[in-house]
Amino acid sequence: MSDYLMAAVEAAQAAGGFLRAHFGQPLNVDANEAHDIKLELDRRAQELIERILLGRFPGHAFLGEEGVRGVTGSRYEWIVDPIDGTVNFFFGIPHFAVSIALRHAGKIIVGVVYDPMRDELWTAEATGPALLNGKPVHVSARTEMSDAVVSVGVAKSLESIDHGMKLFDRLGRQVKKCRMMGSAALDIAYVACGRLDAYIEGQISIWDIAAGLLLVERAGGQVLLKPHPTAHAKFSIVAKAGPLDFGVGGMQ
Image (cartoon, rainbow, N blue to C red; front, side, top):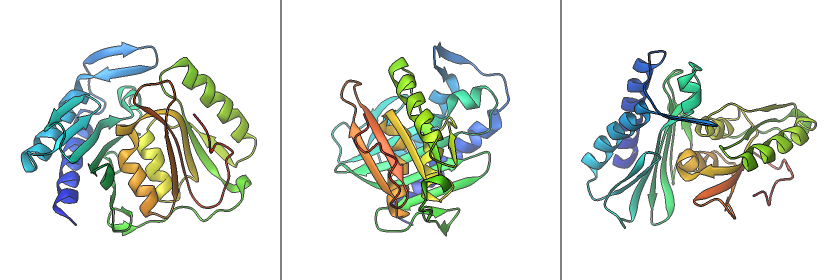
C-alpha cells in the first residue's frame, strides 16, 4: 500500500468513525433544498479529511464538495465527498459513504470508498487490483440482461429527475431489478464487487464518483464518463460489468 493510499484510508476511516458516532443524533442543517440537504457535518467531516491529507501532503490541491483548499495548480489533487448520501444520513437510512480519490496529472491513481455503517472499505491503486476489506473483487460475470441488477441515479434538477425516471422505466422492463439507492459512491463500489451490474446517472459531480471510477476499472469493468452539455462541472456516467448493453452509451 502506497503512502497515498494509506493516507486516504486513514482519512476515510477517521471521517467514517466521526459520522457513525453522529448517526441518529440531532443534526444541524445548513441548507434544506428541494431535492437535497446540506449538513454542518458535511463541512466538519471534510475538514477532518482535509487536515489529515494536507497535513501529510501540504503541496497537494484539495477539491471537495464543501470547497477547494490546498495548492492551486498542483499536479496532485485530492477529490473528496465527505458524506455521499447526505439525505440518507439525515433521515436515518444507514446507506452512505466517504469517498476519497487522488488525481495526478489528470489521472486517478488512488480510490477509497468507505461505508462506516457496514465497515466495508473499497480500495484501489492504478497498478493493482480493486479490494474490499483487503480481498480482491471483480465485476459481475452475468451476461443476460434479464439477470442484471442496475442502479439508476438522479440528481437535484427536474431535468435529471425526468431523465432518470424514463431510464428507470425502460430498464425496469428489461432487467431483473432496478434500484435507486441514494449514494453514487456506494453504487459504483457495488458495481466493482459484482453486487450491481451497472450504475447509470445523467448528471453527477466528480467528487461523487472519482474513487469509484478507479475501483470499477481495476475490478475489470468499464466506465463511460462524459461532460454534461449544459450543467457546469457535471458528468453523465455509465459504469458497468461485462458485455451487457444498457442502451445508454451516448447518455447525457
